[in-house]
Image (cartoon, rainbow, N blue to C red; front, side, top):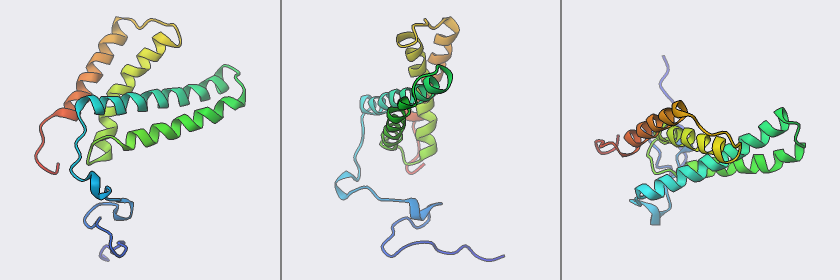
Length: 147
């Protein structure tokens, strides 16, 4: 069996990471930056709004007969979603995405109520609360350094 080839570029600091070419260290002024809980929630709320709006634009075009012009702001909104989610303060993308999932579910229920004018029922609200609790456990649970 052949050994793994080193894919690092000169000056790359991503050695030991699963995808070293995808690793981009933060600008020097951002090292050690911590985002507060309200800041994290603001990032996730903005990402949820952008994702839901982008997906709704596609939904409106495909399922409700809206003009294909709806796809333009939809794609822009989905790009904003990806950018915002990349700002989430986590060392691992999977953990950021998992925590975001709970916020997305709660935001989807707000969209159901505020935009689609369908009031969430008790089961919707209970499920949303469980998901938010799970997101909080993932985000704010105590962890060993570097995990």
